[in-house]
Amino acid sequence: MTDAKRAIEAVWRIESARLIAGLARMTQDVGLAEDLAQDALVAALEKWPGDGVPDNPGAWLMATAKNRAIDRMRRQASFQSKREEIARETGALFAMERSDFEAAADDEIGDDLLALIFTCCHPLLSREARVALTLRLLGGLTTPEIARAFLAPESTVAQRLVRAKRTLREARVPFEVPRGVELDERLPSVLEVVYLVFNEGYAASAGEDWVRRDLCEEALRLGRILAELAPREPEVHGLIALLEIQASRLAARHGPNGEPILLLDQDRGRWDPLLIVRGRQALERAEGLPRPLGPYGLQAVIAACHAQAIRAEETDWVKIAALYDALAQIQPSPIVELNRAVALGMAFGPEAGLALLDEISDETSLRDYHLLPSVRGDLLEKAGRLDEAATEFKRAAELTTNARERDLLLSRAAPPDA
Amino acid sequence: MRFMMFMYPEIEEKDWGPKADDVEAFQAMGRYNEELRKAGMLLSLDGLQPPSEGGVVSMTDGKATITDGPFAEAKEVVGGYWLIQARSKEEALEWASRCPADNCKIEVRRVFEMEDFPQDIQDAAQENFGG
Image (cartoon, rainbow over all chains, first blue to last red; front, side, top):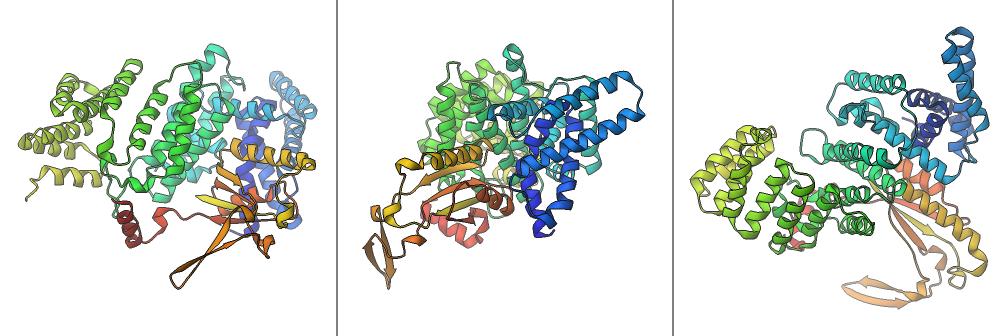
């Protein structure tokens, strides 16, 4: 890639989400908006290497996209007879001629961006489609980049994107920020997408490391943008607080050969203090709002508790157990109970944790989940019941799909002097 | 990846710091910082006091020598910095070129991450932290 092309790509990454958002407001169709923005990118790739990047590249791209839109619509209007379509596009044309991107106030641009986020994360779309569309339209990632990040074939991702855009168009999903009750209903779907992107990067599953870090950073970026756009939502700050603190551990989570290192065994000197501070600040913003913390906020408080302990032995497990208890009240799930069992075991001894595990071990959702025997094995080991512990670690090793984790579990299953 | 953007204001010590008639320039800078924040890029930033509020420690042959400012080559001192997260060097450079400052230089440098170091250096760092 030439320097000029790379520079244009950088501009594109900065401008594309705002560009697509502005165009989507005018056309009420994110698919069409993306096509128009792509047209403008093609034009920039033709023009800028010779003429240089214009002073206000965002405005240039918008003006170009609008011109292309007007061309397209005139062309289509002369071929198509469907009255409805023409009426719709003429309306868009009219809106387009009147609206002036450069004059758009900051909060209008913000509103457009927020509307774009909510549209990409619309509950009509499957989770995978929401994630792909968000990375594409808000992150400016290409289809191959998304495919690589999710270890999916390019054609699958491409199809997913096409179908998602068609679904939104056919359902006539209005391009807007939901208000009131609807906002409360739809926000979790947005937050979930950001969280999924982060976890895809954070989870020690396969894939190139740099892709993983990039995904985490992209999720952080999306979360931070969201926190600026929707500052009155405690869960938005809760989520970004959680992500910042989790990201602070990125450099400590793996050993030299890529093997996972558990939280309590991590070298805390490698935790990124800047991200921990940012996480705490985000948490303070969440706590400063009149509404109580939600599930993300509570998980962030737990993460902050861990971050506060300079050494693992200093962890305030009683507090963490209480926080998991609170989390289980507002978002009951077997996974939360599993974590609560760990915390109880640390705070009040292994038997307390094992007692809770006995209560939840019938959960069908946990039947093939490797962390259940893994946690049980850990608690049994602490209780000195080594034979039982080894059986559990072996069981966990059979269930995990991650080779490195399997090695770790098998080594724990073997007696220490073997 | 992270980048540090160092601002070199290229002014003398006596001209350092905000003046009453700089309101517009400061507002523009505030808008720029806000833009960085809204784009989810900004990790931290600070403006620095003039060199006379600090000093220079030189290390020679195992000996530290402190020199107080102001310094003759005042035009080469850092006036402030931004730490940003960007997706490429080009993106960081593009953001730097959007800074509404004039008659100054901004140096953009990529930050080392722990993973960038060879393993033995990482291990040594670990020992220093106490493991």
